[in-house]
Image (cartoon, rainbow, N blue to C red; front, side, top):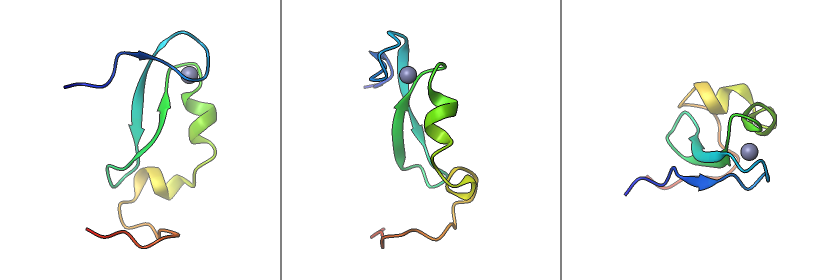
Length: 60
Ligand SMILES: [Zn+2]
């Protein structure tokens, strides 16, 4: 079931979707209005490099 049709929690009222990191881990729900702002809080490699160093170990 797609989970991409909810209003964004930022309050814009726009449809939001999950933005995943380079490993496919959901980071945050974003809409076109707040995506850039929310993603600016993450290191670039988290979004682009699946081999980034995580702060916490991940079992997979
Ligand atoms: Zn938003």
